[in-house]
Length: 333
Image (cartoon, rainbow, N blue to C red; front, side, top):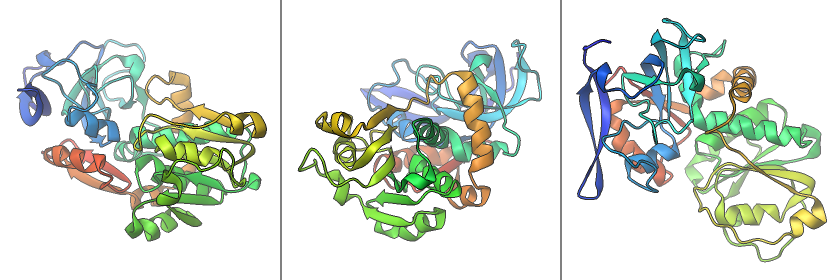
């Protein structure tokens, strides 16, 4: 085990507040696991914003290294599926919450949590996708498995300028869907059209509680990254037999609605979990991302930052001030 020091963003709890600072660590300080990875890149998700700001008590033990995603190169392995030099990706498994995560130049995890870098994507591109893009693909697959196809009609994406929404718009457009993108950011209209959205809907049209249990049928499918009253509102306008993939709670985790969309229109409400998703499903989703997410659009929705920028960016993402996806270049402090 190397005694060489490396940099990591470490959270500590002081007087009830979470404080972040870059510190020097050694491999001996890393948590238990059977694979050690030299981390090349991570990313910033909404959950990272919550962790860095101490919201929801997602982290119970400090000091803690956050970062729910990372990509890098295996340094050493006691897992038969991986060997030194393998390029790997990790999302989910409560890494960055219960287990030290990717805002560190080295990480040690269980090999069962890793997947090998998908062919056709660089390590940086996998983090441009990250949990947000992985979730978007799981949502697309869930809608497809419940009968969605381009000929069925419009597909709505809420929170469309965020990470999940941006990648969902790009994927759906590539697959031939007519995509309606909902956002509260007027300045992002051109950006969303560039990703393939055909219609832009003001968030305010959907964010109020529904006035009626059923509205005119419009959406063949929905990818909802907002939750709350927005989810309640869109359910009322889903077409007969259509589905809503619920994958976020930026607008709240409570929803007041009726059973009428389910009973009278056969609407399906599909929960999307990217954290504990089984490995076989992960590999399949990453293969689809490599094939069905246009790389030019992925590049267009991606920006880069360094490890020292993360605390300030974590505050911004909670207030909807981060567009698309952010890659954190871990080797740059």
